[in-house]
Amino acid sequence: MIPPQIDQLRRRLTDQYVVIDGNLAEWARFRGLVGQVKTINMNGHALVQFQGTADRAWYNIPVEHLRVVEKPAEPAEHPKASSQAGAKPAPTS
Image (tube, rainbow, N blue to C red):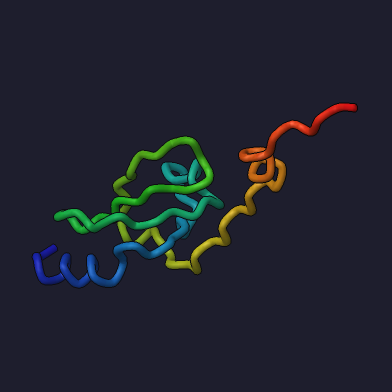
């Protein structure tokens, strides 16, 4: 790819949410996961960080294997965790 094409891809895809499109065995572990494109590198591949796992690595994935999707909904915070953070124990009588 030539630099103008890479810059165009970078403007179009950076910060977009994507999923793996297709049934390639090498990307099967990411099937069903939503990732966010962090940038496009100089070989024209997207650097994608997938959500929903403890793995925070960026993966080098050819853009032809990605499909842009809507931003996923934020997971709801557990109500007990937020209410107990500043609560004092109740006095016993």
